[in-house]
Length: 451
Ligand SMILES: NC(=O)c1ccc[n+]([C@@H]2O[C@H](COP(=O)([O-])OP(=O)(O)OC[C@H]3O[C@@H](n4cnc5c(N)ncnc54)[C@H](O)[C@@H]3O)[C@@H](O)[C@H]2O)c1
Image 1 (cartoon, rainbow, N blue to C red):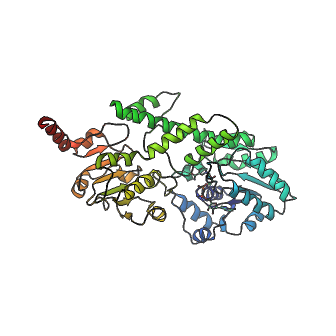
Image 2 (cartoon, helix red, strand yellow):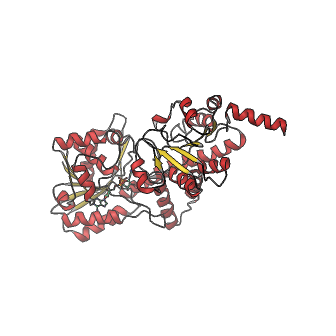
Image 3 (cartoon, rainbow, N blue to C red):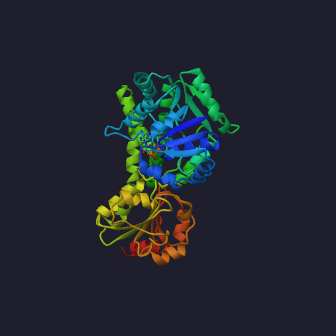
């Protein structure tokens, strides 16, 4: 089939490349000409493992191409996917203007029947609005479907190529069959296609993200309690997650959820609930807990070193909101780094993929290191924000040698407190005991005896 994908971000480029991989002729369109120029040079404008290879091979075979001429892309295709961004507005609601603008563009370009597939995460009722808009702006028939996306940055290609489930909101049977036929070849044996009306499909996407966010915030609340009463949140997690009714995933305590989806989707669903006069108490709490948790590492630093951090140096490992991506949207590292800089600290940061993006957003006072050890020299403490593989098994002796003080604040619970104590680090993590290292513990004991 000839397919156009409008928007070549994390979702659109992945969808376009994977649909081409499945044999379709795909044109990826974007209004941002610089993005199209980058793609045409054979590069990607963001980091997503494995995507560059799928893009390159399909460009080479002629199944995938890029254009900034959206109208041309629409005219060349029968099915048009809309994958443009839907960022938060001031009041927390999702901004659907980019979607409506893209749909107006489709209407202007149409020269015959089309299936328009909304893949962007959009508030309930958007498909209906889009249908009305198309009816008003073109004389041609357009079938509007809702197809929320569940891929995860960091494993986007695998998620698209082998989806656990595909949700299709359709109002027209024939269009539904066509869309189902498009996705069937991607399904693994235990995968499923779930068909429903467009309104339910739109709401389902928000409900799924709200559920994930709720698990994270609840575990982060439990972690706070663990710290107070001397329990270990990792042990609590293992026990809780082995209950089949609960399951083990998305139960890790940490420094809060970030990225381009959970924070904005929780806010948008809260807004929709309020507009519909439905109590949004649970989601309001989920968001409040998350905002607090994003400040947790900064709180630990201030607790340890005081409010005035002038003359202190902090090493940061991990900038993106999670490993496997360069996405800095709503990354908890931003909260820590801004807080450190405001208090006069020097900040040296490392991330395997996100340093370029971080440099575009953060104060230029932040220094970046090529390798993760480069940022440790003279550091008063290391602050860990995302669990990239390269941070999981570091050379602790080298860290000792480079750092001014062996202090680690770990927002991802990468190491065992007992082992860190034996390695003589002062180590604070999330929902577990604070260890001071053998030397630190001896110092405290001596102080207790003399005092
Ligand atoms: N990123 C994710 O992991 C993810 C996962 C599931 C769903 N989603 C949802 O998918 C949507 C897209 O997310 P993303 O992260 O890929 O966004 P993104 O910001 O990475 O990319 C959006 C792209 O759309 C382009 N664009 C804007 N208006 C356009 C138009 N009229 N025509 C053509 N292109 C246009 C922009 O220039 C940009 O390149 C959002 O609604 C998001 O909530 C994202």
